Image (cartoon, rainbow, N blue to C red; front, side, top):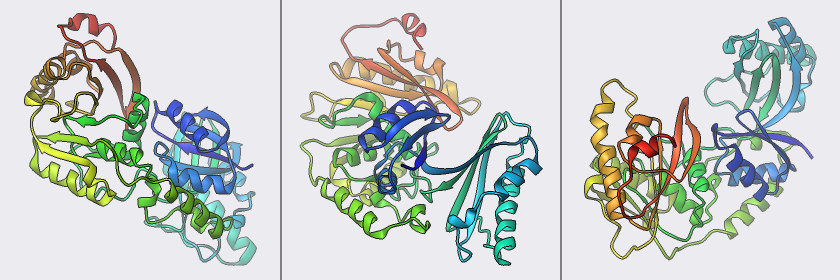
Length: 389
């Protein structure tokens, strides 16, 4: 079976491996920034449609060692890219390079592009056009310690671009990161989720889509694999039908989002409506300091991503917010489980709560902690917690 590579956020590889296995992938192995796996092309369509955690699915076609631009160009030039690209298709090359003698990513992308174009010109006298905006076809180059892998993109737009989010808050969380965090909590799709600082509503929308078995790819306008020569439309239609048959229409519980910014809340409502889950989520204008469980809800889970204070001067302003959050969780949500993602250890300590579980997660370039709190009555000492983060 063909080999593929699923890209994800650092810290979510284990969750990605579990998800790929559930989607029928074989011989799954963690790799830098994701996981390799084997599946059929039908399986590739399914993973693109149904993966909530992957940000892109690549099809590796070439591996080699290169120490300079000439070696890089020669290796790519010798590989037959006419198997994938037609002359009438536009294409684009993107690259990520670390710890290699060829360290300029733009230079790497340019040399690979030149090699592909020159190959076509030599074989046919013509060349495909390069399109940097919205190409038919993407080539990805990943370089690490002088080892390069060239892959064909099967996803098109990044998979976290579900299609439901038009506007977001000041620091929006990517949809696949939100889905990965939800999976790490062990939530069984059977109890409500509350986000006391919901922002654009991403965590709640992703949870609602999960609970409804709605494929995240069903909200998109298309995939890169539809432009590949291997694409089989009949097989793809069969996958779409099977995914649609698994969707639910109603749930026995709801999701709850709170924020103090009315404009951000309206954006969250609009996002939920575009995702088709607005009937499942209640958004309310309320602060963390006064928050209590929704009426009639005695058991649930809190998942939230409060601001971290990454700009100078922000941290002091946020200390009260984290103190309020800790107080509210301890006194108003006893018997609940709360999960918090934060990139600021000092602010976490202001909550004066002890974490029972923790994961290291990267939110973009920032290393964060995803912490679990089992809420019981009684005070806890922040000095005890300090040793655990």
